[in-house]
Image (cartoon, rainbow, N blue to C red; front, side, top):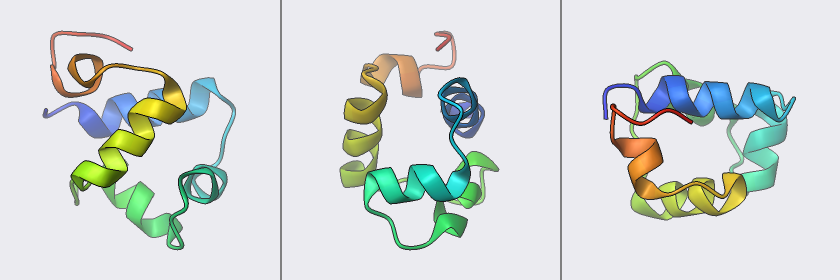
Length: 70
């Protein structure tokens, strides 16, 4: 799970989204929360992780297992 933030940033950039746009898509009021997750300062809640998986259409393994790429 060490690479979760890196993977989230990659997915966001592949979609051409800003941090603010992604936060809006996920229903998060604070864009800094997304930024903090991407930089490893915070970890997402299970609810947010579920929203992220659905939004990007990726599995839990793809996000949390460091051996998998997105």
